Length: 219
Ligand code: ADP
Ligand code: C5P
Ligand code: MG
Figure 1 (cartoon, rainbow, N blue to C red):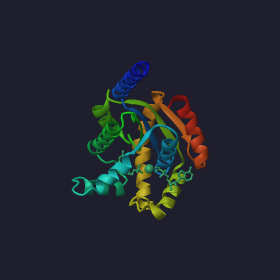
Figure 2: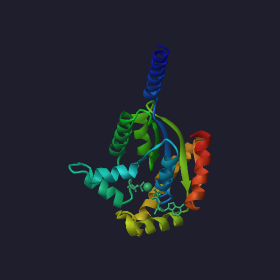
Figure 3: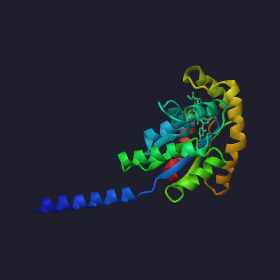
């Protein structure tokens, strides 16, 4: 009988915890920085060590570009080559769907690293329109790195990435987009005290040591 009681209260607790998890709003960390700053590399390290799901806006767009039957394939392809930011209606839907699918598959997965978003005012507006009140943006992890280092890393990555934009011509455009459109977004979050700036010019382990400090404190 005691065993039965313990089992039943254990089940009640676990069902209550499930309820809490179900009610959890997605907790989001935006990950920003120049092209090649190391966002994807550091996100992969975070996922190994913390309970976050990594969603890269760029990866989702590349996936959509190659999806058979996608009505946006050509548009995405030309925006990526030109280093321009795809209209947010497309990107926010991909992000929303990925978040929903992740949470549906596992209700405990409500912490997200959203990498490479929001990259301009249009992105930010789209996020606010679709996600305001539905997700909490905890802070922005900003990988700060000089343009020269960013370009060198992307050119090196281009030797094997197969990416259509890891070449000097596209990179010049991507850096311009970053400076003109993304930096002002980072500054906006900075004014709200929401930016956690990491010196991303150092080696991967040193950068990750600083990432850990941030996440251990408030992740
Ligand atoms: P992002 O997602 O910001 O564009 P990636 O994580 O894809 O950047 O990194 C770009 C390239 O630079 C990759 O080839 C990666 O292996 C390399 N890289 C990433 N972080 C570092 C680092 N701290 N030092 C040197 N190379 C790095
Ligand atoms: O982040 P990543 O380097 O993978 O992004 C590659 C390209 O994907 C960007 O240069 C841009 O053309 C597109 N992109 C976008 N909107 C985002 C993220 C990426 O249009 N929010
Ligand atoms: Mg990346």
